Length: 349
Image (cartoon, rainbow, N blue to C red; front, top):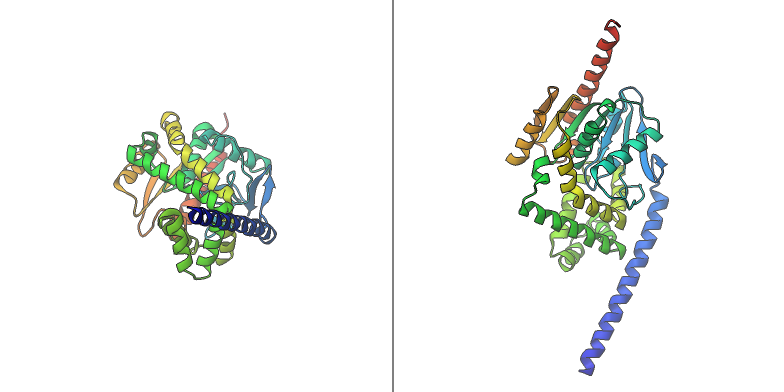
């Protein structure tokens, strides 16, 4: 019994040493990241906002859950050639600070709107929303229709699908929240940073061992899928995204947004109504029948909406088919400019 007890205490001591070493490794990594990868845009009350280009109407880019301003790397500079374009990081993501307020959709809209006003972005605005960002765009249009010149919705989640989530959907959501919270714990002791550094360096065996020990292997599969998507972005953004994913605050922010998803969808189901602004909905080529039906129903809420199925694309349409997204943005901007031109010629009575 004494031998077993001694082994236990030795194992515990080794574990504590490893945790302490991992925490020190993580703290050093955060400090290095802060020096190497400073925010490219402006920090406004703890929010990172990037503005480029000129020309009205301004185009606001709203990223999906867990994504940042860097997710627009294939189209942002192209939009900036003909219009002012704004991207930003929601609270806790990218370079933005963590905020402990609720993640209700009206709060998210208010935070976005306040940030745009503080950097003096004019109205009305074209809002481009990917995934969860599409729900934020729709809520913005519902609450402040006079401020929205048009929208491009990139494969948004189904409103009714999540407002009345099935047990299977809720179970999937709980797993996602648990995975995000576990990721935050592992990031604190440096395991996420070590795994990402190993993967980016070409190693496989050690990341696989860590994944099996911490999440039964599912975590590694998720990380590898995300790495595959990130590799579609410009190479200069890769280390910055890796730095963001190594920060525990990122996982906390993702968990809170996932938890808020049903409530956000429920708010839209109750308050959206008819959509007055012109918009194009880009539905991923691999969207499920349920998702496609939801997209079709959303377009029916407007006389100025159009559905476009993007063949050969997954959920990250702006990475798989940036040309299609750019074309949609330019079309919505052109429609607004044409509307303004016609309005200027209308006789004043």
